[in-house]
Amino acid sequence: MAKSYRHLVLILGDQLNLDASALTDFDPNQDVIWMAEVMEESTHVPSSKQRSTLFLSAMRHFAQLLEAKNWPVRYTRLEDADNSGTLAGELQKAIQDCKPQQLVMTAPGDWRVLQSLRAVAKHHELPLEIRDDTHFFSTVRDFAEHAKGRKQLRQEFFYRELRQKTGILMADKKPVGGQWNFDEENRGSFGKKGPGLLPAPLRFAPDAITQEVMGLVNTKLSKNPGALNSFGWPVTREQALQALDSFIQNRLPYFGLYQDAMWEGEVWLYHSHISSSLNLKLLNPREVTAAAEKAYQQGIVPLPAAEGFIRQVLGWREYVRGIYWTQMPEYLERNEMQSTAKLPAFYWTGQTDMACMRDAIHQTLEHGYAHHIQRLMVTGLYALLLGVAPKEVHEWYLSVYVDAVEWVELPNTLGMSQFADGGVMASKPYVASGKYIDRMSNHCKGCKFNPALATGDAACPFTTLYWDYLNRHVDTLAKNPRMLMQLKNLNRLSDDARAEIASQANLIKNAS
Ligand SMILES: Cc1cc2nc3c(=O)[nH]c(=O)nc-3n(C[C@H](O)[C@H](O)[C@H](O)COP(=O)(O)OP(=O)(O)OC[C@H]3O[C@@H](n4cnc5c(N)ncnc54)[C@H](O)[C@@H]3O)c2cc1C
Ligand code: SF4
Image 1 (tube, rainbow, N blue to C red):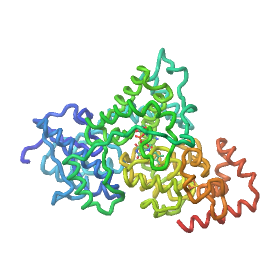
Image 2: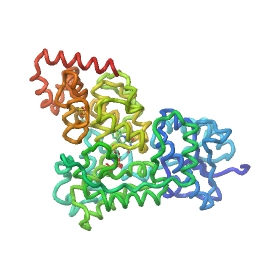
Image 3: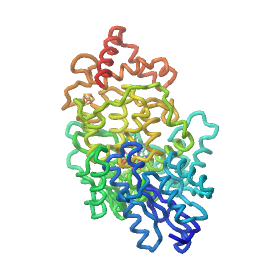
Image 4: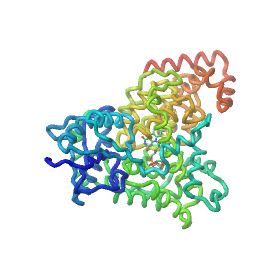
């Protein structure tokens, strides 16, 4: 490229939308788009085969869309012989070749990436214009304003503020149905009979581009976790819209009721499976909440289901983003409970006798997906109770899920699931014994352990480690009024019982 350009517009793998703020004033006669596939993004944590394939295939499909508009795109492929392997290296080369007057981008989703791109811009003494990401309802500035002066942040209050601002599920400035939150009605399990016939999720057969990427991933990233046999994620906006519609029609009516329920071998249940499409920006959260609200207005879905779902997208998704960008970079280093254990090796294989863990990990490796309660109250809970170093837990979650981007993964893992931020994200640690898993699933029926037992050969490791966790952290937890009930139950255990639990917990820790 001999000519010099006005803007080099940077498009990252999770910014695949034509209405991106970085593209609003794009002029194909003066500007050029930069996209790069680099090894660093698949290896700084070992990005699973499902996740790597999704990102690379969606990027290639998006570049094809841009090229069809005759927009100039400078695209580095993973297999290019002169690929430097890093975003910074590829950007340097693009700047040297294109000689832009300015770099333009939509705010990225990862603090590390932002720092590295900023450093390149600085090195070349080029202005880097970072525009708000309009694929969120709020800006980080809105969140910082909300957080100002508050001792304690809570998702519920930010959510209510956003309901008022956007008018979603509001009538005459009041919440539709007379209450903000219908969570009390949203905690069902499937009971003994199980879920019965479930609506099949909409999956997409890999097209030629995806198949090429799968071959590349299986060759270049063969050691990364997981497998690709089942790959069926939306890789284009059209597919993502179809997946959203299928969810609204077939699964949203029962979403609320069975949001927390689990069942052996059932991966998809009544969840939406749209997180990866939202996070890659194939879907806009506004069209997602509008579709759910419309389905409620048309009488297709009950209010608790629509509200429960909208709260995830309008409430939790926006809230965790605010936490991430207002707390980084210190957040990544937080370890309130001073946990130092290593992540057990079976997180990468699923080879464990614990039926609930085996099921959650197997489906994660097979599909790059597990629903919220599996992440929070199975794999996350076990790591928390075992005392695994939060950074190790974070790296696992960032590696294995197709929807993993650091702005959303880190606060959920380090804050909500590991309580390593000491309560910034959640008001108390989400701790429970195996009895919770027994109540919400059928896993324990087919497990060699018994969720009611804390000691002995048949003791459930969750139950042993739950009491051990409370006992180890009693002084810290006693300062939290929301833990009083659980600590009261701990106090009922005799000294002998506690000692026995501690020694069984040590056996589990030493075997991990
Ligand atoms: C330890 C842990 C790690 C997680 N890591 C990620 C991650 O890397 N990426 C990610 O998108 N979500 C993450 N989550 C949140 C949540 O588990 C997933 O968004 C959800 O399981 C995705 O499946 P779904 O699309 O079927 O969601 P549904 O259950 O159908 O929910 C609908 C949508 O709401 C949003 N949502 C729901 N819960 C949350 C939440 N807690 N935070 C932010 N958005 C939410 C998602 O966009 C999701 O697609 C994590 C949760 C935990 C406990
Ligand atoms: S008994 Fe314990 S380990 Fe086994 S499935 Fe139940 S909770 Fe999981």
